Length: 110
Length: 117
Image (cartoon, rainbow over all chains, first blue to last red; front, top):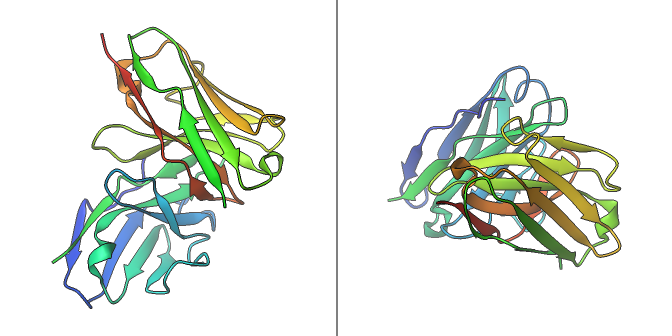
């Protein structure tokens, strides 16, 4: 299975909103409601931000939101804060008991 | 609280073997499927394998099928990854992670595997 496509970088100023895209196919992102997003700070383990396309686990600020249109999922970070500077990864179930991740997006808070 | 602690990483020559372990605590381990996910230096995340809660089914990425084997011992609350015929391209941080319905909800801190001659 091929990796999902994410932009390598994104940026925004504090207080602004940034959206990160994640493009797959009808065999993964577009075919199942099992799209999730993870935040990873340098040297740390990933942390779950969004699951099942748009659901936020408890403890994650509602500044993080997810959506999907066709084969492209999106993560929006509203009200950017300095601590949001990190790498972000999307993931999707890809059928036949396989999972796939995106290549990651480095978010810079200017 | 949920804790996943990986161990067993190290430096190994190409073609050799290594076994990783992941000790789980803070939840009923035998109720959850578990994944291994890896991250090569400076690269993104790559799904490696998943095992069902009772060990009855195991699934692998094509890149590791036949060389890496996932297993678990629910009596010891421990997940394993047996890595045989290691290649340079297997060099990565290996994370164990808890499987929820369709996604991963908790990750360990990872253990580093370096394959080099």
